Length: 312
Image: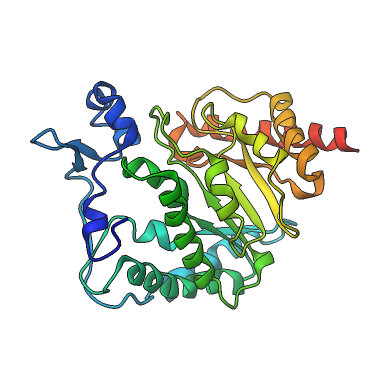
């Protein structure tokens, strides 16, 4: 696998689904939820970043400057939760996703860029946890990047994922594991997803993250069946699964009984005390209207009640 300089980033010009379904992607090229702002190159040789997806370049050491901004965010969330008996969480981008499309003109390798970002992001992670919130690291790069490198083998991709888990753990040094959850996904775009990497390929690596909760897409038609991996894969002590049980793939409201069934499958395999309901990614921006989003969340709440009664 190429590792140095900007070669890795500049090779990020293909997508497995785009190569298999060129007509579909060409017909929807103006819809970023389908194409991810990629366009066909003039010579027909592949897909390249479009005008709406300009390159970012790192020209010096990555440092964190968002102290005032993150304090404003945490103060605002504290005010919003005042008087409520709930525990808030706040999401922050993972180092792999932060550097995924970044050109490197400073660090000697992509690994250096990745870990430089991890050290800077640690400041934001600490600020969220120190404010009393659960930190959610959003790191879609763990699963979605398989689409972007059509020639990469699954073994190579496991190594790619493992390096990004190492960077996450580096960023989390000094932060209690039981205050962190990790979310990954295959990208929430409305596209085929036929060539997504199977979750069973990368989950053993993802489980090495120094976090308590593992949250991922588990309800959309491409990945709904993958709960079966837990028939053979052992959940490490202290970790909690947070599978998505409602999702963005459709505006159809999931039935609470279906949600309860989904939760029950995981509960039977890893224990009900180790399962927490979650949503697939992109729910608020991919469904057709806020009404749909709220209805899905209401259905999830009802499904959790049904699943809990089944356990009791």
